[in-house]
Amino acid sequence: MSHQYKREKDLIPHYDNHLEYYSPLQESSYFKYMCDELGVDLNKINSVLDLGCGDGRLCGSISPETYYMGVDYSQKRIEKATNNYPDRDFQVSCVHHLCDNQVRDYDLVVITEVLEHIESPHKVIKQLLSYNKATQIIATVPINLPYVAHLSVWKTEEDVKKDLDPDVIKVDKQHGAKHFLCGWGV
Image (cartoon, rainbow, N blue to C red; front, side, top):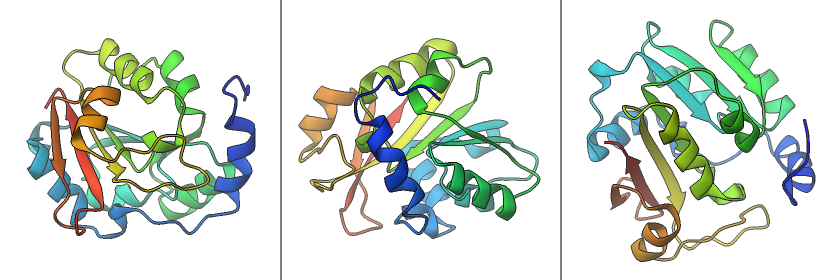
């Protein structure tokens, strides 16, 4: 994997060393909550791309008939995901590299607690939307949470709108207003 993004090389060991991590997807009901809040009809979703999939925990919330591809920076997290969900597809990749070389369209792209970790998150969203105009993207980003591995911090809905330009922004009320829920193409 190339390290063209300036902090990429430094962040991979951080992710490898933090295999237990916070994600709102720890609750199996959270994915449905996100979709409901952002207006995604899961009955129309046949394929899901999970960027920053970690240990693959989203797999437990989607239908076995739905094609799933999980992508993460961390080889160790992908190994854990593959062990947890051997019937699903996983890939080690930088989000930017994947977006530069994507060959498959997905009905839904899920990006939970990832955009703050990557350089040029707006570029990632723009690239994903350019592959298929019907693609829907849903994401969570933490509200005002500086952290060593966070490259971006959003304090207000206006910050998110300016940097990421989602079609929909909502405050996540299920987790005590710790996240913004963002949707594109929804």
